[in-house]
Length: 431
Image (tube, rainbow, N blue to C red):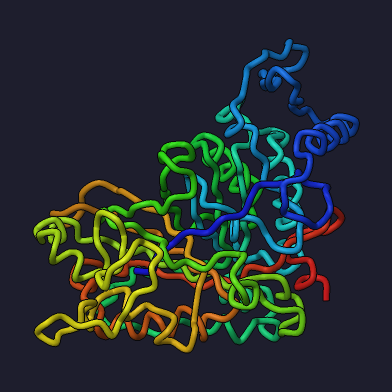
């Protein structure tokens, strides 16, 4: 189980330049909504006092409802990279995979991706799609992001095998995993994130409806993390369901070489993946009943960090680099040889790194125990140099293995972002 935390500030709205920096969001949003209204599309308008809420039917008067800054936040849809990768993790996640219908080929897929792109530009700006239900009426965009990816099977079904990236080769089997294939893989992947649960649900349902006749849902999962504003200090590392700080050493966009580890470079192949990233999804069940039976000292030795502060057992604070060579008076490593942080450390993987964006899940009870854990989402330029070598080492020796179980898996090629006159995946499908 790898740690997760990254930060990207929300920026302008769809239709802005290829930048994901915050740049006059309210002015750009009003311009975008005005353009949609001129085209005959209903929308919302943000004023100094609040947001005009949506009302059912035509001819009804809008109702004024004040939105907080959290509800007004917009993450731009268009850009060099798709949003939802370096975006700071929103409070809610809906993750789902779809399979193409038997008669859906390349043309049908292009039509669907074009429809999804147009819908995403509206939804992320807080503008409903035509024919939408009322599940999110009155809500702001709430940092909504929609991220689209392709599974290996999609290339076979659409006759695009020659365009399938080498990086999309099946993940190897790892010791101890119990993968449920019914909840793994899939032709298409949708990652939907927002700071408001109804907004997240509504956006996912909108894209599912647009897929009718072309693709059906293979599996769907929901996750959560800490809500913005609930921590005493903004930007502090969240805790996972085991009570450990989770994300201390996650790479950050300001780090040297960050882009090369997370995104496919301008000179890499295939050409259509430039600016994109590869996503490894793992549903990791935490065996919390067994974990809770350990005392705090033993839990800390399994992880290699203090539970209260997140500091490495070698001393210092949360962000102090671990001293893996430090030993006790008895000659034993202070950070045990099988501690999670030692085995996952980039220092022991030729610098291999991933951007982890984890979400907790809780599905109640199953098989006589808690069915809760981590939806592990790891973004990288090449899983052969990121997830695979790290997970191979963890699966062999990690002390945490006795308290977790990998139960679902997926690997997806997530293409780069698009301009306002393009759709996601266009450079693949229109070659």
